[in-house]
Length: 158
Length: 385
Image (cartoon, rainbow over all chains, first blue to last red; front, side, top):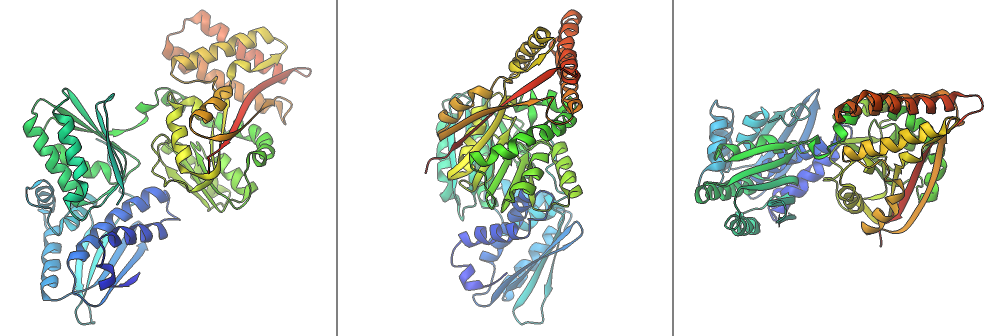
């Protein structure tokens, strides 16, 4: 899915709508289409909510979903400036650190609002996602990649 | 974002439903207001029911955690039980963080305990019974279904699909444009997927879900089936409410149920009749109603449907191979006079007589001049436009 970043960021509800649309579109042949699309929508929505705040004002937002066996790869090409690049690099470093779980809990339960990158922390600590950023050849574009296994992520028992 | 939150005084329970993905905490202010109103006038345990909360973002979750942190500080004696659904994949992993706020917060995953009798049936080896039952009832239902409005090209949901064989037959015979088959038993669903795979059918969406708290959208199916399932639940009206919700206005809901005390056979009619009357009592002791069939009209009417159509048919030993009929009865005996009877604590004298009625039914079914029957009630109704 490829959208103008300005159009995307015009309304908060676009995060929810795009997450639901994409998750339904790619879920039909899954073992349990509802279970999978609900989880994928959760993941995509958190990513889109991050992008909603962290992007440059012009450019294209591209979202690709690829599948390799049990692993789903979500790639987001995001228009960014220097500030946003630093945000993504630093947030991904936190999410891939050993402290991700602790940071996630602190962010959710802290008195300040949830951290802007709480979604990345959640994906890393609760879903075991591998997350990284790449610079692209296109100027002012960054690729955020999330590798995650949702069909294996059945809800654990108490 | 569309969500609802309401307090059920009877159960001291706040029920959340829908989607909570706000941009800011202010958008879910009704949650904070309701919790604050409720906690000052209750004691003991507050239940927070998230079974029907389909989606939540971290903004809402952070606000929820803040509300509960405050409640735990202000009401240190109050216990909080959070109920989440195993159907929603994110729920348990997400809510476990909230459990770390206070030892007074307990999180539990909703499961089969809600249906008191069904665990006994599922543990009792009902899969082979279901397979044979569907084979025998399909001979009748394939002709009956069109009279209740089923046509090719419809969007169909089979709720409580069990092992999914009815959905496969429906797919082959009626070619729906969309077919969702849902059940809350994972073992049954796995079997269902295997059956579909064996038949090379890829168009059925098998979904894990709870029939009394469906997460499917409103008004999306032309035809909703729910076979032999209302009789297994102790609160069939909760399921009918959900069937009504997912059916589109003008669409129809189709249910089948039994009245087991009307099973019959000749010869040895008296022994057979006695046993099936006892089956009805046994199911009642497990909070299930195997006599529900003729009550379907009232239940559909009270659920808000109109244009109720009802009919019944009799599966008999003359439908195909009498041995199939006998196999069903034997499976019933194994479960009813076996595990269920033992669990109820029946004495040996009762069990012996109880089993004899099933054996007499089998005798009638296999006798060259015998007749054995198992009646089914079908009811369908329209969701008003």
